[in-house]
Length: 270
Ligand code: DGL
Image (cartoon, rainbow, N blue to C red; front, side, top):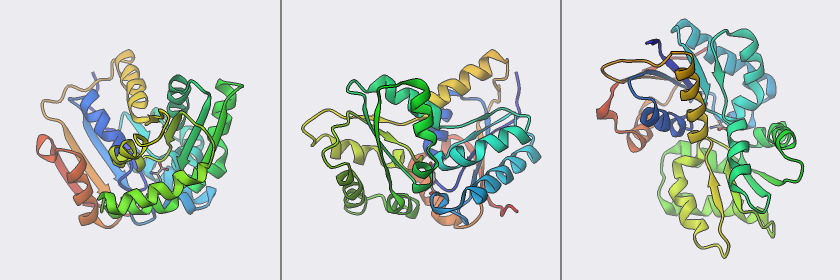
């Protein structure tokens, strides 16, 4: 048993899509969430900046004595996880490899589409993982900066989100994928909108959200190392680097905040 906290990190609200699954699957824990809302979007930033921001967030988690951390951001996983794992001695989980595994499991045609940030696409990290798991996979990747911003902005109504999603799906042209990776943790926040759009397609397309498999792996690790928590009350301490009210409004749309002991503070990292 280990009652230290688990840290979740994202550039903004995206990591909430992963935290939400963890709250359901791994109860009785205390969680810390850091959203770098001041410096988001990460998807357009340099490799060096993202690596530095990721390590700053892990340093913050270390100061909170976490037992482990989840980089609940594809872009930060692509650019920051390697260095972070070198520098910190607590286990650090990312979301990219789980997404690749899940899509190989779901795709029959071996044609997989990826929606992600431009940073994630340009990093080539998805391609590398696909190559290491399978030799006959076709993957087409599209960077979607406007979708990240639209979701972070918090107005999740169909009339706002559907045109943005359609703009990016159109870019796949005649690529006949049967699995679509939501390769940015912001995107599963509008998973139902994606489902409604895909339901109109003339072929079946499976959505891939890395959260479930990431959290399964996390849970297995905690169980195998006798590190599960046994708190009577689940708590989540949220920290954001700016836009506290906007963050709070999205948080309340996604997580039943009354079920947990919650705090929300502003914290700038440097
Ligand atoms: N949620 C993030 C991801 O999974 C990053 C969005 C951004 O800041 O550009 O890549």
